[in-house]
Length: 162
Image 1: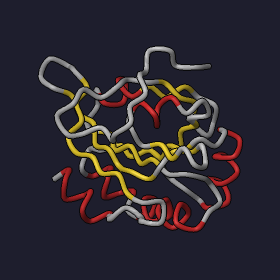
Image 2: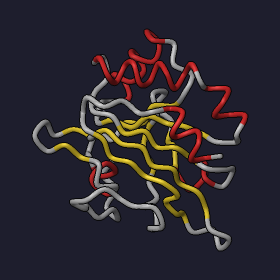
Image 3: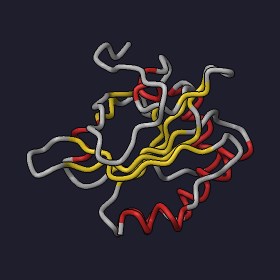
Image 4: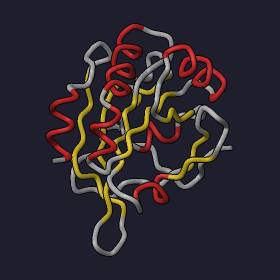
């Protein structure tokens, strides 16, 4: 189902900007909504191009290996790519991932966050930390767009969430 309220942008979203809310299916075909999960604490959105590929596999395996570090900080971390929930399920089961994978099959979320790679029509590689202001507004706390072959630096992201 398309997400009609999201507005595509050319440049990656930056710290201090409002974070667009969205709902996407996870690998178990359950709806996952950013605002609901951000109510419990910060959410780290990890955009990546494709399942079953080298850097993406390494990056997501590292996320799972540090899963308790994220949870101990009260942070939820999710992967987002344009692959289907079925592809995510097969990959998560094969790799033993502990974290949620979201299916941005219509590319609206990666475009709304400015982390899109048009040459392959996939999400780009980037990380966005989203929290809530005192009034409940979703706010970008930190963001980083990277080249397709540049994996996330987990220590850097963990440092950004404190």
